[in-house]
Image (cartoon, rainbow, N blue to C red):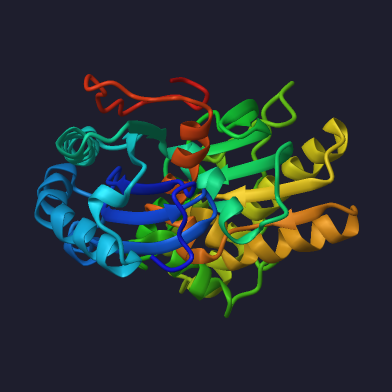
Length: 344
């Protein structure tokens, strides 16, 4: 192989925690040789959200094909791999089990070590892919459909959670509001698009604060406020201008996220701030965070949108750092749907 030495660590990574079946080959933690993704969005759009049972079946159909594609694009065989990494939680239990069973079978079949990866650790690790200069420690804001965490990344794979949502995750709020105004699924990208035409100051929505916990988030009050506004306008017979509503809602979420992340970076004394997770691809969040970082002399890191949503490249990067630390999973590795960050 050109440019490949025996010292290189090659990881075949598998991700199937929700509705993307993905496989990737990652060299030495930061070089992506391939990143194959099979999305199920169209399958689930009809239902307005992910149907777990359908997701599991779709993973079973796609997984071998996606792995073959990842190996072919990387121009490597399964035997060339140093180890096999796989997401084992958190996520939908049936979906996770497909990836875990596949990874175990492959690792066992070719006699390679198995490395179980925490899905959220994968999201954080996405920042390492395109930022060769980024190394821990730094502050990271993780925002996705199921998670809103503010963490200090102390070392590779080591986190201190300093803030989290007390109710809905930010992505969840996006999906619910999108559904309420008829934008459909997936909510995040659709609200982002609609908001570009709207005025973020058109409607004053609340910012959820958690008493005594400056770094915690709360989005259920905001979600209720948006739903109440919609109902009130409908009762009054008013036409709702969706771009204004989307922009105002998005502004409220973004403001809550950015203000807390910046506060944490300053109070804990970090000059590096990263964002991760599906909502990290939101254009309003990215520009607001960049502006706030510039203003406060903080370096801002973020993955490309393709690495923000679920993918296996980020899992391969996380697996690499777990692997070189000597962490291995046994053949009893199981799916852990509600795995907490920092748990093994």
